Length: 338
Image (cartoon, rainbow, N blue to C red):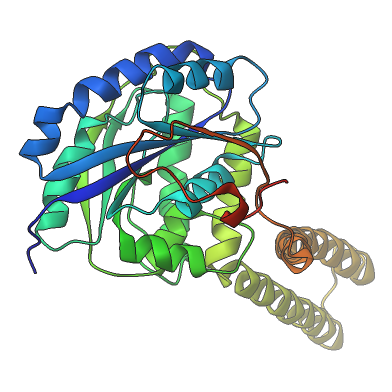
């Protein structure tokens, strides 16, 4: 089903200590989404939903100055750093456009691709995600990302596109579906795949960061990876079950083997009881440690889910009342402090 007619666009941009990027980012967005470009791609307006995820520098001040100068953006300041995935969810809660895009503030997600995605949306797709063919990262990170996407895809019970991050464009229907999902631990690219609808990828080569330094440490990447796996698959739990059962079979087999040997009069160079004890301790400890690790990952996340705490808290909303399509009133928005 092809789509015609003008469409509004919201672009969600999570920010965390991106003061150095604000001038470059706003200039690139203004150039990319010029009135001529919007008209060419059938977009009636664009609004930028910028989520300040508890920055400790002057990111919020710099964005507020741009808004005061007429930049068509909304700044949503969170009360602390809740994490990239929760910041994206905050942006989804405030988006009310026909189309919603998600990009990073470091310009490693080229904004002009959103225009190409809008053309794909007109062809009938509900989700257009960017597929990274190449990335300008260290070898260690490239290997880590490559492995992560393939492990998650292998373990997940739903189709998870390879090498696709949060950079995407979504139809209003998809955004509404994502907002209805109740879980607190959010892995947005996984939830995006889970809700379904008609999806397609748009390949691109990811450039290097324009300024500043990456905010995703190895610790945060590890958390993202484990959250993604635990949120979308119970196969690791099945692995733990298989290991436990295999250990039982192995133990029974070793005991049976040694008993048969003793009954047949075979002389072992190592005392049988010592050998049995050693093998059981080594294999048992390995299997037990892995099972406890897997179970801990699920129990910990279950503990966080049952608390039902909000995934973010909004401290302040800054916007220009003259901007078309300003967000819902703060009183009506989720998780806003009075």
